[in-house]
Image (cartoon, rainbow over all chains, first blue to last red):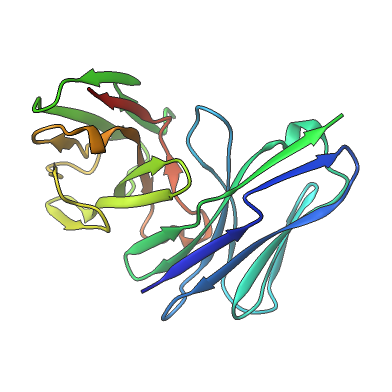
Length: 108
Length: 114
């Protein structure tokens, strides 16, 4: 069965303190790994899709990378507005399987 | 564009009642899905549709029905509400070619079953 595990469950950073979020997965026939951001009381918002090992994508202070078993979301010099829950998901055929998310808090 | 619109935003049901959660999208997306989100468990797929007239079960389909008579609408029906169905429900849509863009999600319906 496809599985997606995110760690840590929660992460508290000081503004400017860089760190990484992890998403490990087991899936037969990966057709894409997705990262989403979710703010409280709202639906997830799409960030990135990665397809193959070695691929990287960047958006502002965020960079997502992919290996054969896991993906990392690197946050460089985060700001308080980066506080949110970050979800990763793997896509296999018609099913997108989500991890439980990492709740990120960035303190000023 | 409005994107994905879900109604209602909040609902309280008594055990055994039925109701329909509405979902509409105006992006002409072929794929639509319903997820439920529970603390510590992430988003779990209830039902999905790859086009009008086509639906299929996801990971947690029991107690829910769906239909897709048009491209735009994908309602979720709770047949006989149970406290275990207390959750936040999200509708999402994406284009057939939209692997690059992931899903567009609605703002959610928070359902409480008492």
